[in-house]
Image (cartoon, rainbow, N blue to C red; front, side, top):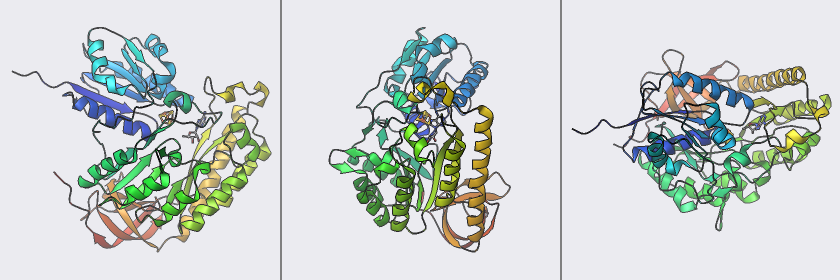
Length: 445
Ligand code: 5AD
Ligand code: SF4
C-alpha cells in the first residue's frame, strides 16, 4: 500500500508577485508529490505567504497565524514565507512557537528539503538573497484558468524612502527574454489568452541586450495571446521605445497602472521618487498621446512625513488633472529600517489629519471616475469573462481598459470573449448587454 500523498495549503497575502510566488511554491511541492489542499484543516503543510508593505498587512498575518494553529494536527508543519518572513526572519520563530519555517522570497527552491528538516524537529529561518533566482525551471500551478501572471523581474533597485520592498525582495534582476517567452507560449497552449507581466518596476526590465520594449513585442507576438498587461511600472522607465512598443503591439491593453504616490513635487522629493509632479503629468501625456483611450489607475500615499495641507491639495489637483479611473489609496505606514523613519519626528502627520486626507482623496477619485464612467454608457466593448460574479446569475468580465462589467451568465463561461454594450454603472463597475460573441480558444487537456 502506498501512503496517501502529503497535502499543502497556501494562504497568500499582498501583491500579485506573491500570488505568483505561491503558484511557484505549489509547483515546486507538486513536483515532490504534494497535493494542494483547499483549506487548512488537516493539511500536512500550511504556508502563509506574507506581505510587509504596511503594518496593517503584518498585524493581519500575526492574527491569522494564531487562528491557523487550531487547524494543525500532530505533525503539521507551519511555515511563513514572503516579505514579512524576509523582514523578520528568526524573530518570527520566537514570536510564533508553532511556526517551524520562515522563508524569504528567494528561498523557495529549498522548500522540500526544509520541510523534511522541519519534520525532524528543526526550526529554520532562510533569508538569503539569491541574485540568480527566477525559479525558471519550476512549473507553477496556476490558480487562474483565464489569465496568467508571469514574473519577469524580481527585486527593486529604487530606494523610495517609505518602501520596505528593496529590503524584502533584494536587488533588481530580470529574467532572460526567451525564458519569459517560453512560459507565455506554454500558457497560451493551455488556452490562456491574457498575460500580465510582473515586476516591482517592470518597465525597467533589462536582460542582456533586451529591454522592456523588446519583451512586450516578443510576448505580444506569441500565438494565442490576445491581451497583454503589466504591473507595476515606474514613470521614469517609460522610454520612447517602450511607449512605441505599447502603441504597436496589438495585444497590449489600453490600461496602465502608474503609481503616482503624491502630486506634490516637494513630497515626491522626500519620498525619493525621482520625478516631479510635472514629470509625472508629462509621462501621462506621452502615454495618452501614443495610446488613444488609455485608462490610468494609480497608487497614492497620504500623510507622508512633512506633507502639508498645501502639498496634499496638490495631490488632489493632480488626481483631477490626470482623471484616474481608479486608485489604491494608503495612509503612510512607517516601516522599520526605511529612510522615512529617520525623518525628523516633528514631520509626522497626525493620525486624524492623515485619515481626513485619505477620505478626501477617496472621494475625489471616486467622483471623477463616476463622472467619466457615466459618460461611457452606450459604448460597445470587447470583454473577457473572468469568473462568476458575487451577484446572482452574472459573470464578471473585463474590458481591455480594465473596467469591470457584469454580464448575464447564460451561454457564457470564463475564458469567453464577447462584445457588450455598457448599459448601466454603479459609478465604478458596469453592467453590459451582449451584442455579439466570439468563443474562446478551447481549453487544452
Ligand atoms: N506606507 C503606505 N503605503 C505604502 N506603499 C508602499 N510602502 C508604503 C508605506 N510604507 C504603497 C505604495 C505602493 C503600494 C504597493 O503600496 O503606494 O505603490
Ligand atoms: Fe508584494 Fe511588496 Fe507586499 Fe512584498 S511587501 S508582498 S513585494 S506588496
